[in-house]
Image 1 (cartoon, rainbow, N blue to C red):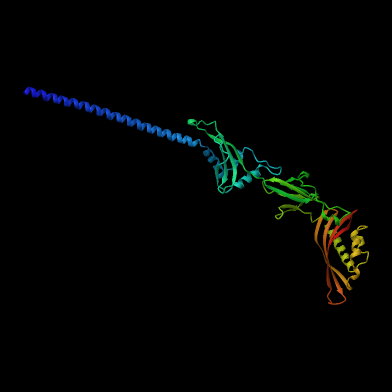
Image 2 (cartoon, rainbow, N blue to C red):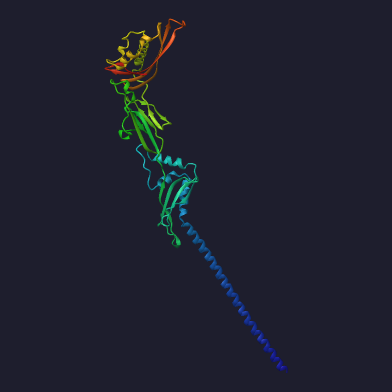
Length: 383
């Protein structure tokens, strides 16, 4: 019995030991397997995460807007040289300007402004196209991109570069200039030619005061278009002297007037005052019937008109007349042989009745003098 019981006990212990060995091996295997699987999954996830991050970075780098952002930054940096050098076609300038004027125009346009970009309605996947515009919406440039084959991005992504940068420059300034046809006119230091005329030279409306003895120079109208900047307009008179050129804001035009001085101004001024004094005395019958004849050319229609229409006989009777305050109020020199003068004189006239003080009778004569064979005559009077 002892022996039987002992055998049974040994069998049971043996079975228990065998069972324990099998359970421990399985657990070890299972744990190892789980560790391997977990490690693989973690490694795979890390690798996938790296791949995804790199893929996303490369994808983003390949997006066209990144290239446009870099270009737009040059606009925000007000980098005129970059914009100028990147322009596919430079703006065409006239003979009166150079590229520096266009650069100044661009600098002025982008100065103190911030820029954004937006894709155009014509943009295509293979030819991306963008506008550069101010934050207020003013479009100043168009950018067209193309594939940059010099760069090899992973995963078959494309790199981009600018193919065309078109800056919208508007040469909208023009110079409208009026000057005597005998004068030389310059725009930014360059002399204008007949090809710059806008139509024929307009004859002077004042010719009627000097005909048939002379002809006043007409008015030339020059028009210069396609300028980027308000020009500097200068002129020289028929003698080659610098003369004034004024800008008229109302008509947006430049006007070169006739000169006001010439070598014989003093001599002719004295002659003009003498004529105006004689003219005043003639009207008041203080000068003879032929007192004016020497001032007019032979056969003058102006003199004939004065003699027919002066009504001298109706002038109030008076006593002594003294001429005072003779002066030239205005002068215009058309040529060496045609000069206009506004001449003022006063007759201090003692009247027979009324105040004992002399009555002051002013005469304001608008006279066109012409030189014929070296001598000055009255060509006409503007009433």
